[in-house]
Image (cartoon, rainbow, N blue to C red; front, side):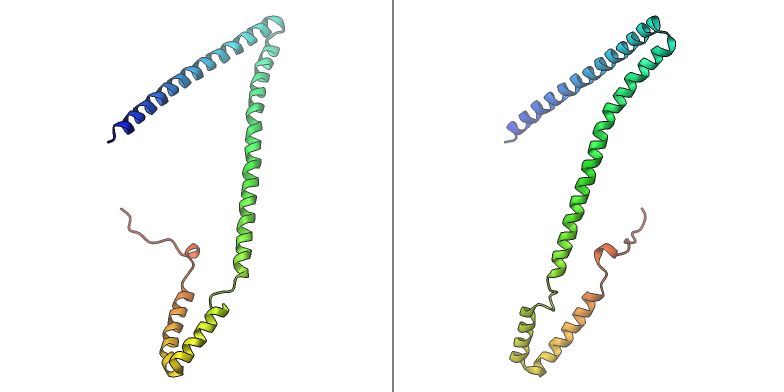
Length: 157
């Protein structure tokens, strides 16, 4: 029953492991080549121009690398800011639409249902129902919203 699932899992794990090993070898070889190229650049610049220019050449290489890494950082920061502004705009729009809708007690259908209930039960029959409804409404309106609720007190372990 699970034979196909486990075979797929074995193949997937095998490929993932091989990709991780190949990536590690690639990273190590790339770093070794980069360091070797920096040493060659330093030694060539040292023999041709002198010590200060050799260090300046190595510093320039690292500066270019830092600049190339800084560009995506700035781009992602701008994208994150744009996404955050879009989310805030959606939230404001949703809150504005929610404020346009009448509350449940302001809804004409609810009021008409209440009037029809009073007509059906009569005033004496509706009074106990109104008392229970008033207590329930007071209870629900006095509760704190979930976002303003204080953190719960739980015993430490």
